[in-house]
Image (cartoon, rainbow, N blue to C red; front, side):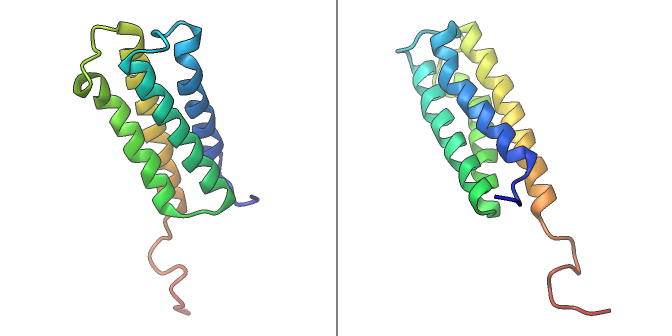
Length: 119
C-alpha cells in the first residue's frame, strides 16, 4: 500500500463518481448510458484498488482503456442525445485516461534502471 500513487486513489474517486452519477441526476438509472456508467465505474474502482494493493502496469493500462472507452461509448452505444451522460462520460473518460497515463509514465522504469547494470 505504501507504493500507491495519487493516480490510483484519484481513479477510485472517478470510478465512484461514475457509479453515483445516474442516481444524482446525470441521466436516468436504467438506460444504456447508466449501465455503461455502472459497469465501467466498478471496473475502474476494481483496477485502481488492485493497483494500490500491488503495482502492475497492466492495471494502469486497463484503466487507460476504460477511460478511452468512456470517450467513445456515447457514440458507439448511441446515447449522444442524452447530453448529461454524454458529457459526463467523455469528461470522466478523459480524466481517467489522463490519470492512468500519468501512473504508467511514473511507474515505467527509465532505461538503465532496474536492469542490473552497474556504473
